[in-house]
Length: 158
Image 1 (cartoon, rainbow, N blue to C red):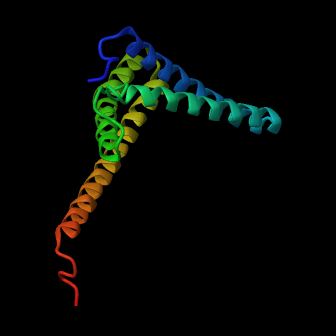
Image 2 (image 1 turned 90 degrees about the horizontal axis):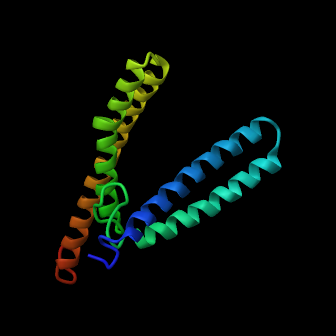
């Protein structure tokens, strides 16, 4: 564990990361709208600011990875760890989060929003499958790499 574990700073880093991530996505959305409305200079401003936010969020993650993923608390940093953390959060989104959000919207009579959340759950399920396949392929590649590294020099070659 890192010196951040159990400190308020750990929670504030998570909060800062989420704020930057949300800002980046809002700015990218705003850029798209500005493009549609014929304001390419404003669109570029939003894209530039979004890129700055990405750098900020990455800086937060550099500190957070000492303890783990800000959403799952699972280890992150190496690709296999990142895939496992992504699978975990994506699974939670499609099995718990989006179904609950859809249920809430439906109970309030907001069927268009409920349908949107149900679609998001299906999308997240597809993302989970892609991530799992990627992890399996990575594991296979790493196993093959280890097997090749353990062969004596010149073995198996003609």
